Amino acid sequence: MPQALIRGHDHYYEWVTQDPRQLRSGKPVMVFLHGWGGSSRYWRPIAQALAADFDCLLYDLRGFGQSQDSLRASRDVETYTIQSYVEDLEVLLDALEISQVFLQAHSMGSTIGALFLNQYPQRVQQAILACSGLFEYDEEEFRQFHQVGEWVVRLRPRWLAQVPLLDRLFMARFLHRPIAADQRRGFVSDYVGADAVAALGTLLSAVSESVATAMSAEFAQLQTPTLIVSGDKDQIVPADSGEEAAALNPNIDYVRMAQTGHFPMLEDTSTYLQHIHHFLTPVTC
View 1: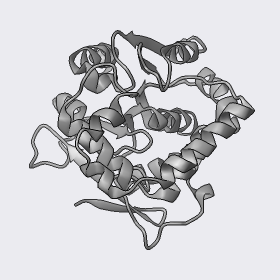
View 2: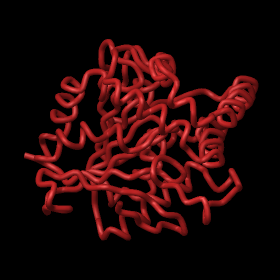
View 3: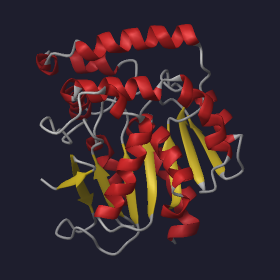
View 4: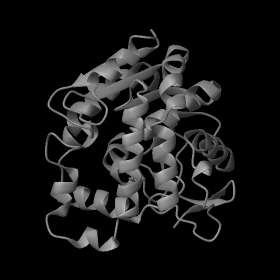
């Protein structure tokens, strides 16, 4: 499987193109960022649908999916910050000799993506941030979240992925509409397989005072044309928070998808694709 050594850590990546025999066709590149506890696998249906117009680059964030590197991986949660993943992406693009991309990201990946857009604006032509938005810092709520999160991260025996019907229970809070069984099982497998230190480090960094207080300014200063897509039934990143972020900047378009939760790209793929095609059409035509 393709691996790139990025800042001392092995990263799994794959190309999704119209012709599977070609890694690159010369089309514009779209890079995909997944969310916490997941992997790039859930982006494959969207990448396949966009392969007529883009060479799609999927990769697993450090410590997640197939980007496992236990021999070299740091055991310090403070090395798994959101900012560190921004830097990983920049080095990955350099390693693959990609100067400019379109960017599509989801949930925690959208936070990484928003920071990347401001730090490396010349490298992204357009961006789509799914399930992204603002959230207010509340010291007590964040403290409780971190306590529960650490408990959840540490209690993930791998046999959980084999428990019948667990995938339905696990995904219930994330979804408003059903998704395919193999997708549900994939999420559970990725969740139990994520590196514990990476999972805890990213959780503590993504839901933190520093990120919460910084994101208003990050969204306000975006120069890259960006589309935020929210699921109107999302219990993880409420749609109102995405609309608030979009209202800060005329460079941000906003779509609230009806009857979808935290994975609108999988819960209503055809509508999701219509929205992003409409957003991308002026550039890709």
